[in-house]
Structures are given as C-alpha cells and as structure tokens.
Length: 56
Image 1 (tube, rainbow, N blue to C red):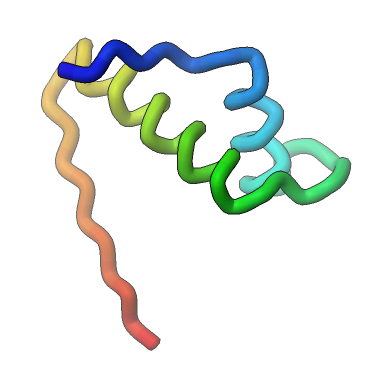
Image 2: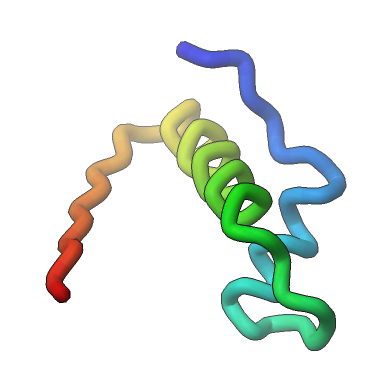
C-alpha cells in the first residue's frame, strides 16, 4: 500500500473544495491529491469501495 498521509495542505484543499471553508478555490491537483490521501487513510481502517460515474 502506498505510504501516503494527509498533509497540512490536504485538509484546507478538501474543506474549500467541499465548500466547508471560504477562501480561494484549490487547484485540481491539490484536491485530487487530498482525496487520494483521504482514501488511503480510510482504507487502512476498513475496505473502501469507490464508485465513479463520469456522466456527461
């Protein structure tokens, strides 16, 4: 499993992306990195199923 931990930059990026916190919108790369780090952390505790739909 990759050695990934949530960094200090991940939490503000997620909070802004989810509109929990006001401020400048984080870049797409910062949000993607934060989401992957969050999923890695969650999967250390229990299995995680991620379903994506790219309906356009």
